[in-house]
Image 1 (cartoon, rainbow, N blue to C red):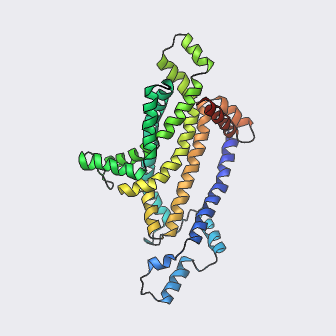
Image 2: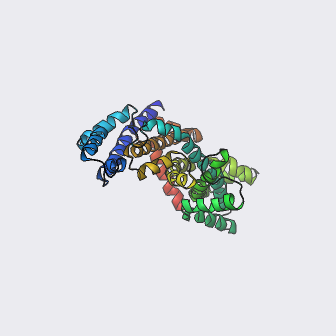
Image 3: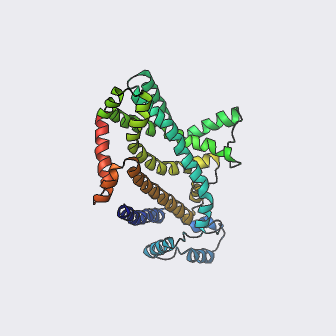
Length: 330
């Protein structure tokens, strides 16, 4: 197990390096100069040249990239062009807000999607199955900013139950979390339904029924537990989507998180803030996926020996085979 963990941790290095290359390349090909947005229109050429040299933008791109990577390794994500504060310090201040919104949205999606997907599988081809699938698709097809505006209109403007903009207390997190969580409802419902349809047709489920166990006990103790590995994988994937969705939703609700920070940095052409924000979100996403992979061994102990004995990608191989089998069943 330790060997597998060390291997996955080392695998983070090329992933993060690839993220740095992509973000830096996008910055390099983006037209315009951040100096133009930092100085007034009547600034002299000497002032522009001085600021360009101060920001290090007068150096060749390979030199800028090497310096950027070296600083990032030491924890220096640069200095914000607008606030003149370290980007890492500003991100760490806003990160707890984004994490609360992200994991709260994941919790809402799981708490709603897993029971609905289970109910849809147990009641396959019934009107309940149809209603659940249609409802989840409606939320999936609705853009997050539209759903957020509808929730603001209903719960803030009409009912006056929840605050609409800003961070004034714990209640301010409810609407952003609900917006992102409801948008991911279809993903959790679909994967739970497909996985449950495969499990409930296994021989041990029929054996449990023959022993006289109740349908609720069979579904919760036997079927759902064995169907939960694909759901856990979906949770890991959704964390990245939730963090990305927070960029839009935080701007809609005025939440001072990492998403709004990156959005404001894009508007101001604040490249160090953009690069630092994207790099931090990518790091969080990869760490969460690593933790999800490790959790498989606790959900299904049979995978632990596979992880320890296999040389390459036991979980990935198992997951591909499971996905193919699940797709055939669904």
